[in-house]
Image 1 (cartoon, rainbow, N blue to C red):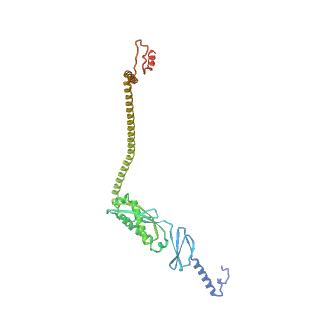
Image 2 (cartoon, rainbow, N blue to C red):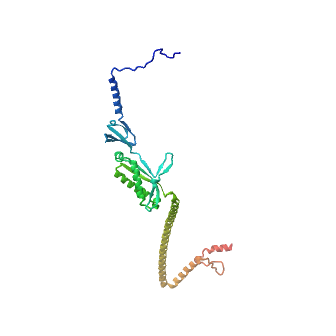
Image 3 (tube, rainbow, N blue to C red):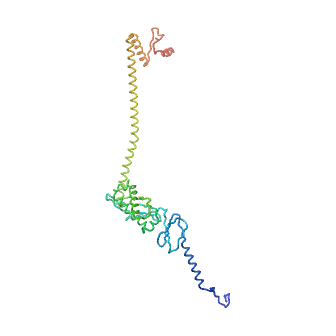
Length: 328
């Protein structure tokens, strides 16, 4: 069975023939020119800046957004992330699977007291001058890494291992950042060091156990000192307050005794004057005053011969109550 729908005739696809071949070449050329001009359109991301160069010379620096430059090879564009805080790991690497890899050749260094220590740290930096960053140094991240490694070795080489492992970390970070920034400024890299952060600082594995024991003992020592100082800070103010209170009480008692002595002396002089004027009357008054003081300290009962009436002496009024109780 013949399945050819066209019968015995052969099907042929015939392209239209242009009258002039030059027209085709002209259209193709125009299309190529348009595509070439469109290739100059570029977009700068929000965290980027771009440098436009004309025949290798910088003509402008542009910020985020769409822009246009004359197509290659007249003008070219280079971009960099200027707002991002870039990070360089030295002495270790964080793996994509969440793991951790130590790089011993970067982390092992010699201290000032000739001990070996492992220092893992991070350098964070930002780009502040994109033209310097792109064109003054071939590989800025590697330059920063090499300079940071050399700097930390220089700083650690001036410290003893105890300071590095304990209280000297902050000082080492600050000193390393200052020196590293000075080196990068000399290289005109166009970057600003944001921070140098020490991660793990520890002795080599064979001796780490003993250093931990020493660190634990040092922590205990500091804890005991802090506890003693806290106790002293608590007890000394109390003792000072108590001493001040005792001094005030003593001064008040002193003033009281002095004033009382002055009063007694004044009364004695007045009594002496009275005695010189009327000796017998003064004797009787002193007698009764003394008797009154004695009777105030104890209970005394005085009765007459009939045992009915109390002798009306000073201070015996309350004995009437006693008499009534006896009758009951």
